[in-house]
Amino acid sequence: MSYKTHTCGELRLEHAGRHVTLAGWVHRRRDHGGVIFIDLRDRFGLTQVVINPANVRSPEVFAQAEALRNEYVIQVEGVVAQRPAGMANPKLATGEIEVIAHDVTVLNPAKTPPFAIDDDGRNVDENLRLKYRYLDLRRERMARNLIIRHTFVKFIRDYLDARGFIEVETPILFKTTPEGARDYLVPSRVHPGCFYALPQSPQQLKQLLMVAGVERYFQIARCFRDEDQRADRQPEFTQLDLEMSFVDRDDVLNLIEGLFTEFTERYAHLHGKRLSFKPFPRLTYEEAMERFGSDKPDLRYGMELFDVTAETRGSEFLPFRVAHVKGICAAGCAGYTRKQADELTEFARRQGAKGLVVLWHDPDGIRNTGAGAKLSQAEKDGIVAKAGSKPGDLILLVADDDRRVVNTVLGELRHELGERLKLADDGVMAFAWIVDFPLFEWNAEENRWDPSHHMFTAPKDEHLPLLETDPGSVRSKQYDLVCNGYEVGGGSIRIHRRDVQERVMRLIGLEIEEARRKFGHLLEAFEYGAPPHGGIAPGIDRLTMLYCGEPNIREVMAFPKNQQAMDVMAGAPSPVYEQQLKELHIRLAL
Ligand code: ASP
Image (cartoon, rainbow, N blue to C red; front, side, top):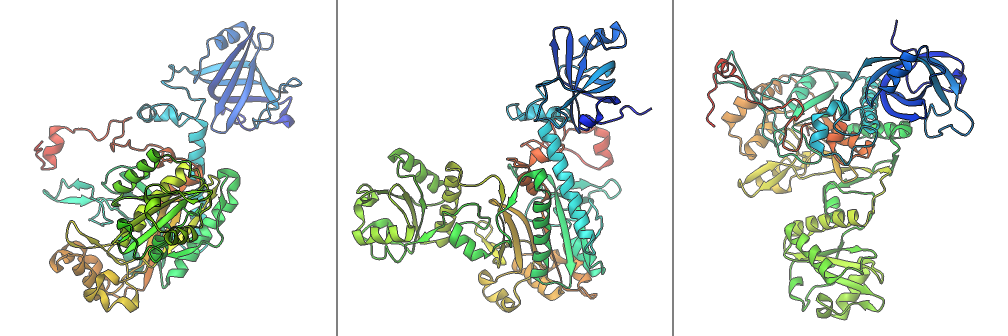
């Protein structure tokens, strides 16, 4: 006999009179003068159970019910009844009925949990939640997150299957596939002194699948990157990894845009989010930097950067005697005190600015204090016109000879003020594409060019001749999907010719010998008829986090590591036995 005839989320008024058996956890228990009320919980919902001495099979059943505590696992047999007049709970799907118990069986008692489970858990210390993750996941919020994630992944699989894609698994024990992070290494027992690298992504493997003629590949793929933890990073995470042959950029963008548009709209009842834009806006990297100071701008609000370089040309004010002056307008912030303005200045300095010029827009114009006292009326008028500011607004200006500094500092300020002023609507997903990235970024520390995306990204055809002569101006066929201030996916059209790939490798400082040792298999494959191809890899964790309205990706992973990259439940990583190290030919030098 099965343990239950119905789930705890299933019974409705039409079941009244039905004899049922339920099983689940004691969510809450109330004693009302000789009658015990239990909220019985399973993954599907809650059902109220009434245990009345008058209805139970025997006095022992009632005695047993009196001993029930939260999180006991029980089975209840009884009859469905309409709740008495005025007692219905409209917030609960099963709120119109209750189950009048005849029999109650304890399947397993439970110790008192280390924290309450009947709330959202946001006030509980996170390490404690992670140590008892199996209890934490019983919360309604966490169960919902798991369900949204499942639905999302299932939708992706169906969407791609319907469009001719096949899911192919690729190895975890592999060779370095760099995405800009450190590799996780696994020592080989059979090959002393040799190591596998866990893939930072299946990038090379999916490209090899294109050479293999798979043409439309995807995988819900685990990626491993040894980097410092942040709210939106984990040592291992999941991507929708995808690659297509015989496509241009727009083929990939349209496919993915369709996927997210359809998922957002079709499952709005589940996640509660709306799309901000349809179709998704496409910004060049340069436009994103100029207008928002970021290559992953939050487009849920405006507060765009404006340029007053021309308006401040020849200024008497010393800080403005530089190549670039830009600003943002913080609407309604003229109430900021000098001290608050100093804090913003400190913030801007930490982001790399030399300082911050703060102007208060009063009813009679720009206030005559600080920088405001040093600017000419023409300058002030020009700034107000460009800022589009009104009395009551605060204008923030950054001046520097390096335009990138001006843009990124203002981008950070925009983000900071956006948060403080709560400008972003929590109910929307503001997807956008960023395109035309530079192929390389200058790495001043190492004194070399780094790939902006990864080294397999193709340069724009017309920029190919500039590779060696002017690498900094080469634009690539990279594209990023951004949403609500996060990069939620990156991809590109790839290099599919050995000679071009070797030129890019040489440029980023990979000696030809080293390149062949590490990537010889891929370079060789390119010589056997590699088709033109490209792909993308949206991050499942980050996207699920946004759909669930969670502040970090740990909330949408069943068993995440904590911010020190530890699994505090199982205690990983942990030391191993001497014998194991010996087998792996490893001696520790701690
Ligand atoms: N492999 C890339 C990444 O993990 C995605 C891609 O280019 O398809 O970011």
